[in-house]
Image 1: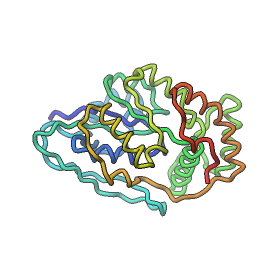
Image 2: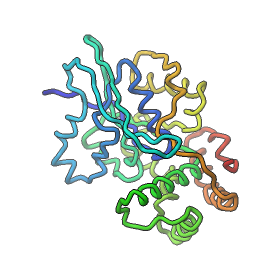
Image 3: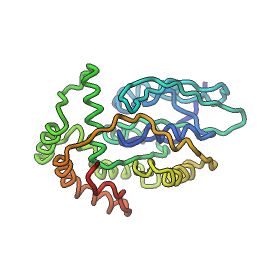
Image 4: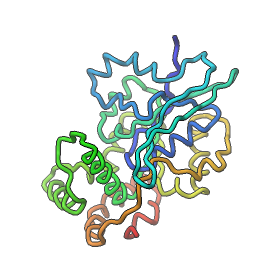
Length: 284
């Protein structure tokens, strides 16, 4: 059986609205989903990838099938409850489809050369978010994993304690579980070095939250993927994988704002465009 090969890949970053973006994309009448929400295939390493690449292709829809695609989508609601939502995507005859996936740890944890080896023409999509918000959300996710009994290989403490620890590690030349992935530019440069600027689109999570700018993003992505125009309408009002709201202590925010000031400015200079205004303010 022949399967569609992925045309796009949302590679990251984690906790930046990628679940919503992927759901918006598969709402397009010419886009079919991957069988898994996040295969994390390339994150399993070169040896695994080489041995199992044929299995990876089978995660994407068969070329000639016409039946609806059904799969379970793990979802987190605003009360912090994890549940599974059944997603059904209809498939029509005589429609030209594309497909793609979203494994958002790929950007930070996977060597771009590995992806390039198997997906040389893939169109990559990135979402970046206020790095303090992203760091906080990532930490909360790991807290939830720890509460669920998952073996993370390290202990998750309260946010303030872990931030002080990571700031000290990074100042000594090390890396942190939460802060380092929020320093976007070094990883972005490594991906662009391998794929080139024409194969990567960078968007901001804050723009995806507003209907007007979300429409602009989706129009740009449709052009990037050579898709016919589709009006997503009310689809763009829905948010997926949203955690309960909470706050960061103000003194911790001040420390992190100072820490991210230069990396953020370097990113803005590299992209040649302004970062969202909210990146410069304390998070209410």
